[in-house]
Image (tube, rainbow, N blue to C red; front, top):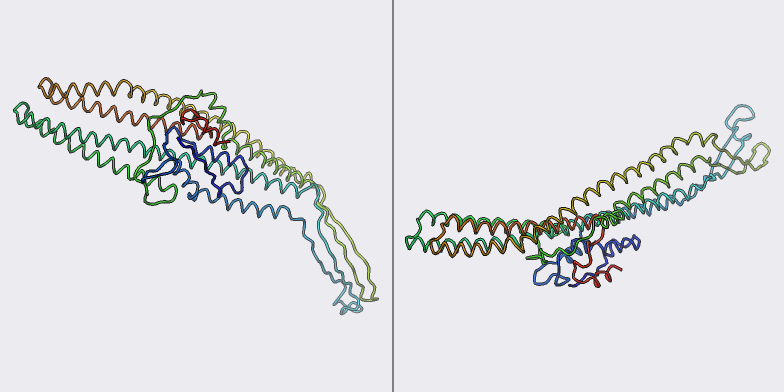
Amino acid sequence: MVTPFFTPTRFVRHTHCGFKKLIFICLFIGWQISFAQAESTNNTLTLNTALKRTIEQNPSLKVFDFRNTALNGQMKIAELKPAYELGFEAENFSGSNEFSGFDGAELTVSLSSVLEMGDKRAARRGIVSSGRSVLDAQRQVESLELLGEVTRRYVDVLAVQEQVSLAKEANELAGETLNIVKKRANAGATPDAEVKRAQAAAAQARLTLLSTQQQLDYLKVSLAALWGDTSPNFARVEGDLYHFGTDVEFNTLFAKMEKNPAIRIFAAEERLRDAEIRVAKTQSKADISWSVGVRRFQANDDSALVAGFSMPLFSSSRNSGAVSTALAQRNEIYVQKEVALLSMHTQLFRAFHNRRQAIIAAKELQSTIIPALSDALKETQTAYQRGRYGYLEYVSARQELLNARRTLIESASSALTYGTEIEQLTAEPLSATQYGDSTKFSGSVR
């Protein structure tokens, strides 16, 4: 098995090393499907290729580049110091008597600004930095969801490929049955009504094959749409539908789930709320407005310096409401985190046990049920040809085998799909051993 080593530079550009590692982990979501090669060859698509194309071309992740640019602009604004203002003031002009005209005017040119108190600029920068952490966590969650969807659609295509193969075998089997019935009818050993029933069964098998092929075409289009292709350029996908790997204990999975980026978003949002609290508290410290300038007295051609300052009173009490609001919003994050953990625990528990049940069903079908039904069909067909069984027993044996094989495909597909859900919740592969080469796996993630 070849493990991928792909770095999606477009999305790592503005993130930390943790996001790079997450992308590597994402590339293994759903890898309970085994692969013989890393790239698609001979018009065959691998999961690795599908994931790479999606990371490179899906537009849903591109919005984070624009959001990051917006944060860069907000940081520039947050780092700005208070602006300087140039002022001009004229007094005692255009009045009456000695104040008529500008002879008695007083002209003042001043420079003014504000002294920010309480380190407000650092608090503003803290909000933007915390907002960037939230953005990075959101990018990771979106990446996990997107790559998980790629894997689910890939599994759907893989399962329907198996169903198409089964439908072809059923069609061939129906044709063989029709030939056997015709031979018996020609020999006078069976009525013509059975020939007509066999003809109808063969026609239904052809319709089932056609319907399954159309479903496969749709699912391939649905998969290709994730990287922006409207028509798939692959004929089939590669993988082993019946390779499930080893189980991992539920408590171990739950411990990993608590490190999911969806949970880390709450930690990032908590830091953002803390930054907002710091900003609210800095507003309780009043800024000092100052000005300095030169005043000219036109009446005697004298000049003098002027200076002044001002500050609002009772800023702390007037800002108490904003601080209380910021504290309440931060405390709300704690509650939302607990709710999310409970919901994800339920999802993980459901996926864990459904996957285990699907694997049990698939293995039982493979090892016991399908071999027994295959032997039964052979014996029934031989007995029917010798006239010991009727047509109904023969068709029933054939249908039981086909139904069991369809159930096997559905069980295997469910096991892989639930495995993908578990990996998305934990942001880690279920087990390195399920990929056949744990050394390659662990080495590529480091």
